[in-house]
Image (cartoon, rainbow, N blue to C red; front, top):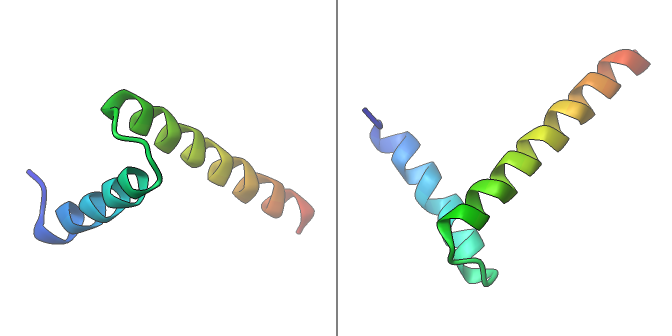
Length: 50
């Protein structure tokens, strides 16, 4: 079950993609997955540098 805060965050992200011209849910999921991958990669590289 989604909490109100989580639902609000998801709606905010969806709105950002929608205003950027991406309205296909599959494309949105692909972009979110890619962004999560990049964030994790950046975190791992930052840990490796320290």
